[in-house]
Amino acid sequence: MKYLVFFFIGFGLGVLQAQPIISKQQVLPGQLWNDSRGEPINAHGGGILFHQGVYYWYGTHKIQGLSEAKHADGGIHCYSSKDLLRWYDMGMVLNLVKGDDSHDLAYECNFDRPKIVINAKTGNFVAFFKLYLKGFGVETGFVGVALSKSPTGPFTYSHKFLGANSPNGSGDFAMHQEENGDLYHLAVRKPDKAFVVGKMNEDYLLPEGEYVVCSGILDKTEAPAIVKRNGIYHLLASGSTGWDPNPARYFTSTSLTGPWQYHGNPCSGINPVNGLGPEKNFGGQSTFILKVQGLDDTYIAMFDVNKPEHPYESRHIWLPIKIQNNQFSLQWQDAWSFDTFKLHK
Ligand code: DGJ
Image (cartoon, rainbow, N blue to C red; front, top):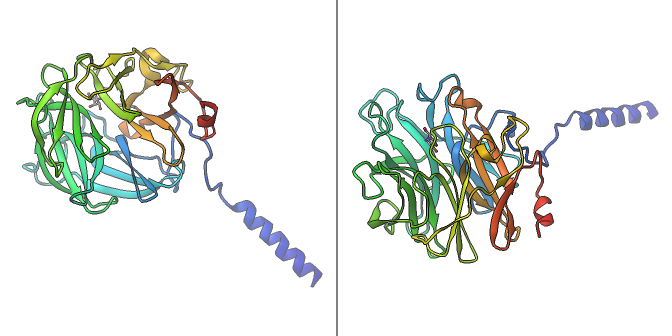
């Protein structure tokens, strides 16, 4: 009997030791970030939606083995998490279309920077993405729109529109939702690269009225990520150098149309993974500012480390935003946990 008890205790300990570490406690900016099954998180140029206690991370799925020149985009990949650390693969929620070159989402189009918002009036989850049609180059940029009744899709492609009141449409963009539900499309206009803002209509499907140039935002501002805090809009962005990194740009304003105040580059420190500092935005390009739920006044800046030759191997940089005198700054951290935010207070 005694031996049997020892056997079960020993067996139990063996099982305990064999358990995988359940939750990675730290964010490791610039390093490989695996999902809960150990697969690299494949969501690029994306953003996060918080809905009913769950975060949903949406981004472009990059097809393994293809370069950007060979059209690596596959559609929208979604992950979910409750703690922002451990991410569960929810699969593809929108796929590009194979075998129909006349489709707007024909495989080999350029599909970039998906952002998803909820329309409380229609109950729709609305996905917006930057869309260059297959075979037409990048002169004219559309905003594609897809809809779902569930955060985990499937999203159904609805239509595309040319934003910015320009026949050439727009490039990189952010969607900003006000507390009252009004939605704004902020984007770099084509072809002159002025930065503009336009209001979307009530159902979020099309812009309504005119776009306005955001006064004070430098021309050729790309990769916009925006958040409103205490009545002040904070816009983090980049310059315009294709897939290559350049210095980050940071602006604030009390109105979306401006005047925006330019604060230069908010970054400091060096990313040891690639040796790059603020002059190259740690090798990254902004994509989203995430407000953390349940922690007061807590924001995370999300960047992509683009790898145009091997986009599947692109990495993510998440950094806690430091706020002092109502101004944001970003200091490189090799590793950080959510306790970091308490130190900022
Ligand atoms: C800059 C954008 O910010 C990226 O997302 C990507 O679209 C590249 N341009 C393509 O050159």
